[in-house]
Image (cartoon, rainbow, N blue to C red; front, side, top):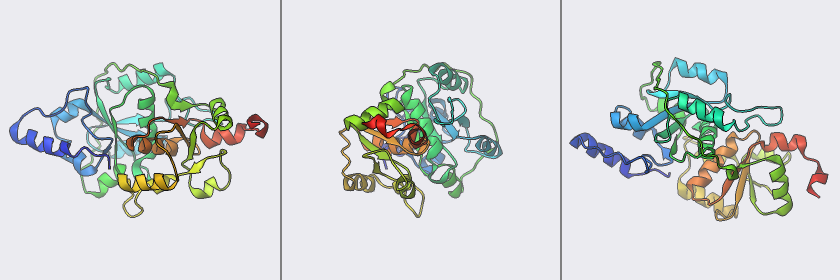
Length: 297
C-alpha cells in the first residue's frame, strides 16, 4: 500500500548503530501511506521528530476538542476547514495563499519538513486528504497519510496523550499550483469539451440521484477494506480502476459532495501514478445549485 519497505529497516539499523539514516530534505522520509505500527516505532526517535511534523486534521470544532482530550504523541492540530473561504455553494474553498502560508508557519512547519497527517473519521482519510490536497496545492509534496487514522492507531493499543505539542514558528513558503483545482466555470468547460475523465467519489446512492455529465462513480468507501477500514492494496485498487476503464495517463478531475472524499480519491490516484489529477473544489454542492442545462449547450 504505497509504503516504503526500507524505512523500518533503516530505523532499526539506525537504532542499533546510532547512525543517521534519515534522508536529506530533498527525499521523502515516508511513503505516501504509513501504517500505525511504523508510526509507533518511530515516535520516540528524535531525528524523525525533528524532520517530520505529525498533524491531526479536523473539519469542525468538535474534532479540536477531541484532540485536546487525547491524540497521537507529538501531533499538532491542523484546522483543515476554518482557514478556508466558505459559502453556501462552496463548503471547503481554497484559502488565500498568504493565509495558508501564515497558518502553516505558525504551526512550526517549514518547506523542509515532511508531514504525516491523520484524522478521526471512519477510514481516516476525509480530513487528512483535505489537508493533503491543500499542502499539494500550495507546493508541498512530502506529505503522508496514516492508514486508518486515529481509530486504527488506538485500536492497536498504542499510547495517546493530552500533552499539546507546540513548535517554534518557522517559515513556510507557498508555491501555488492552479492546475490542481477546478472552478465551476472550468468544469462547465470540461463537460463541454469532454477532455477530462470525471470521477465522482460519492456513494452509489448519491450518484444515482444526479451527477455531472459523463462522470464515473468511484465510491469513497470502495477504496477501503470493509473488515479493517484500511486502504485496499495497490493491486486491488489497480484492478478497480481497470474495471472502470479509467486511464491514469489521461487528465482526471475528481469531485464528491463537498470535496473531502474527492480529495481522498485524488490522493489514491496520485499514489497509483496518475499523471494529471485535479479536484473540483465546489463539487456537487456547488454544481447542483449553479448549473443550468443551457450552460452545457
